[in-house]
Length: 322
Image (tube, rainbow, N blue to C red; front, side, top):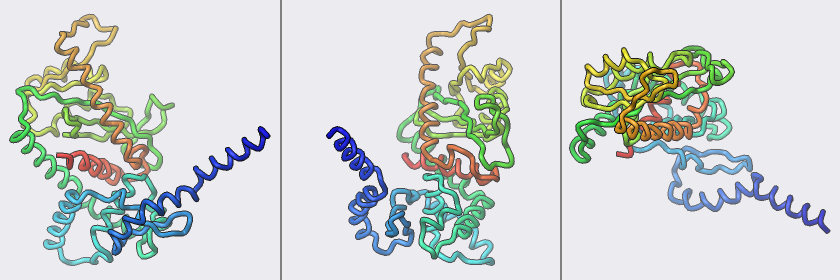
């Protein structure tokens, strides 16, 4: 009797976590979506063999999409020669965002999408956007709008709180801008150094080899900040300790704040700075949100330019919240 109960329970659990149960749930959830989007071109194939509009959950935001289309049409007006796109540019951008969100390889797009789309067509279009720096132009345009909203509507204090930190991205197929990560058995990795504000908006970033010290990257990352970010507290961890860098940034009216190591002789920190250091957890939450984009958890792009543009596209998704 006991073995029969275990057999029945195991069968129920197998059914719940099998593709059959997931397909049934998706049939129910997407039945209403397909009725609202009958003419959609992005049809994805499930293991059951049914075509479902699964990409609706991973569509690129319309604001980002319109900005990219605007810059691309501007380029086409200057250089009208060349091969035209086979399909709607909106479907290309949705596929690119799907790769960023899910981390799927370009080649496996053929397994999911309709046969009318080939992965090389989407990949070459993405490479074209990267060569034209369109993602970076869109990022700067959205960042400019964010500054105007923050200055006019939200208002800023005399001293703004900025946060700087870095994260390691394990390398899989990268051929350039990689170094040994001593935190992960000296395997190859790429380091992402970012400055954000209190709203978790990325203001500047630098992508370098993993074996470069954080304190060396401080000034190169600060150099990418806008001139409106003066009179700011730049809050960092102990890896950014460098009194020479701190002195040079102070001349630019950027106050670098970090903790003290046990080996330091002068370990005094004011109570105000201690409270500011407690706020540094916000950038750790920011990195956790970045890793929700599975294409950025590990580096599968062999080219640094391709990988860096995925990072910029991810940052654009943070900027559209304002």
